[in-house]
Amino acid sequence: MFQKKKDVFFDNLVMIAKNLQLAIQVFREEITKLSDAEEFALQLKTVEDMGDHYTHEIILALNRTFITPFEREDILGLTLKLDDVLDCLEACASRLELYNILEADDYMMLFTKNIEMCIQEIVYAINHLVEKRLTDMTNHTHKINELENVADDLLRDSLKTLFSTCTDAIELIKRKDIYGMMEAVSDSCEDVANILEGIMMRSS
Image (cartoon, rainbow, N blue to C red; front, side, top):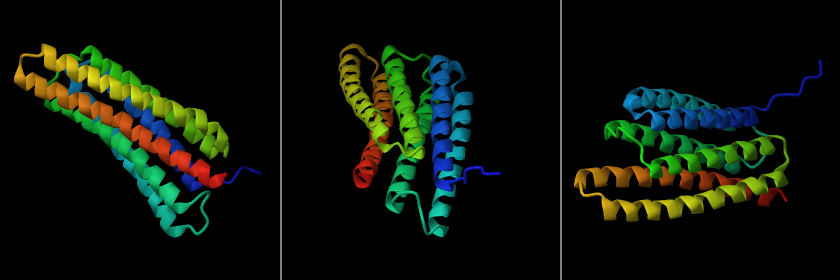
């Protein structure tokens, strides 16, 4: 009888976070089985389409709702930055398929693990946001920032190794692009963390 009233913003933010978890799961499967890259890229496109649906729901709600759980600009900014993470991940999957990369190297696996950890921290932070435990988000946003720094170092190391060992110019171009795109996913996760930190600051 006394069920908690649902909040369209929080409900869809939770769904976006869960969708990101599904996306990185599909991406990891693609990385470990690149012979089926086309199939996994299509799966990830479907996940990305679902993410667009949740994003659209939040934007619609912003247009018709007077009272929001926190600042409208923060809701929109967070939603769009979360969507950017998914878009970047889907773009990586498509590029792997386009370039016909048949086997992931150690750096691709390390980038994937970094992204996976970033997304898990995002999920934790979003859950704290929904539960209105804003101070609990701090550890997770800091962890995302640390992971993005690791991704920066990983990009430098991967490019240094690539340029010193790869003698095939076309393969070098492909790998360089893939590394850069994978690092960009971690960058987009840091953008989410920055929005969350702004929400904490304005709510304190």
